[in-house]
Length: 314
Image 1: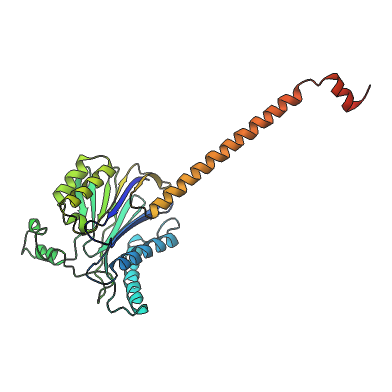
Image 2: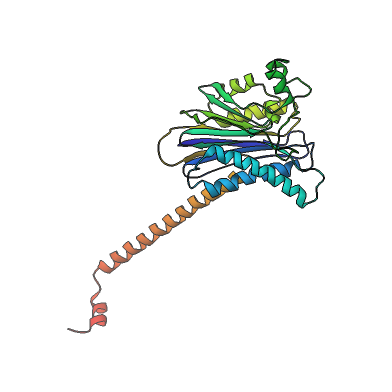
């Protein structure tokens, strides 16, 4: 399985970036996760960091190289993140528990599995069209479901950012799990926070993804559009395009990482390996040339005087 990944997080007009984003993969499985720390509560960035870190750590412990049950892994990790935030608040005697939304996705055996809490979203695109997405745990989504307002009224509604489920809340979070969803060649997964979708409509999102075959250019276009419209919140997006599917390893095709996160460290390690291999190859070539030169010298006839010194007179 080949995939191309783009990820970027910008603080917009906010003083602090409370969003967190990460991905990791084993030989056969990929994890993408995005969290949006809730700015109206103490330590939103801490909550997002704890949630993302817990996902990464558990994945690296359990994906050997496959996860036994991806959906169970996602649900259990969400619940553990919720409990970890409560423990953190108790440990540091915080008056209020840090809170965050979260969306995470597992890709394994040519299928995608995802879950979310709050209003961080996942979109699945196929052949330029949107074929799947998460449904926000929000007041306006409830109003849409009840037929009180239309979907086109959500972006302008004054309560569009009010959610009823999050990690670190007073009650256990509502966790929505997807079905086991088959992926096809060229499918694109996009995970993002409300800093993006609040300023870029679903129609615009589909249009930009469809128009630009280059994943990096498409995502940067979305981010620039959100910033141009005020960028009133942190803007975070992670996207993955999937290529040829075949049995065997997950092969990393391209990584674009502009925010200097964990992927930057991975790129640095890859570059270091390439440099190391190049140096070792150069040394090996030098040694071989040296040996060949020595052999050619040994094969040359020795002068008679030198022969006499070595073996004496006959």
